Length: 234
Image 1 (cartoon, rainbow, N blue to C red):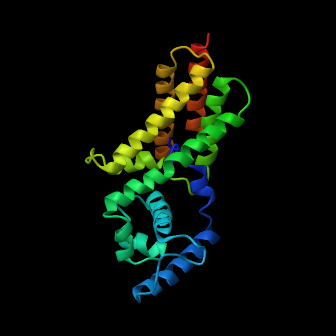
Image 2: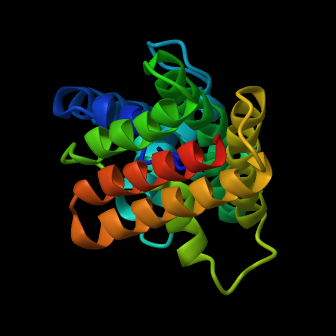
Image 3: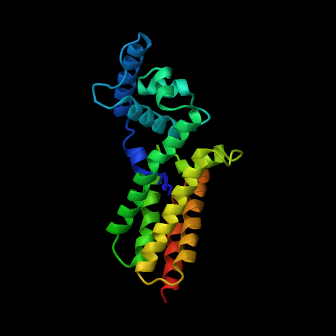
């Protein structure tokens, strides 16, 4: 989710974007871009990553950090170390690139939520609450920018048919269905409705933290989610 995402605000979105790595990537990108402008082959770098993967990585960094409307295709190409022509060879439009940006965050975010849930001690209510606790910890990282799925949806609110909107909706639904599955396996009553309530608390926490920059909102939402799950188990 998220996120979300954790998106949900995602911990790895903050952890991997350290200053030293960004500096190295920008340096490598500028050199590769310069070679591309002279017609040199730009299908890979010294790291061995193909051009498409580098483009998606660059889009992830820039779109998450600055927003999709604020980042041009030229900026993504420059960050990736490819020519604009190469970018358009892999993606027909910026819309397609934005959709791929969210698609690339889908499974990693869901896997992160599952890892937080699995390693938490206690019953299913404790585990659900732990997701929010971990989200709060991620949100305290200075580079946390909220849920990439929700932020993109806000920027595309007047374009409901945009492919990225469908990917974002699909991601949120997957998280909700996964929570419902965990609740069902643990004998929680009315798991679909409870999962939806947890989903509402999760996205509410994402949005409120982004407004107030206070991770305590996620912790409070987690306590509410835990209480809901416990009540349904009685």
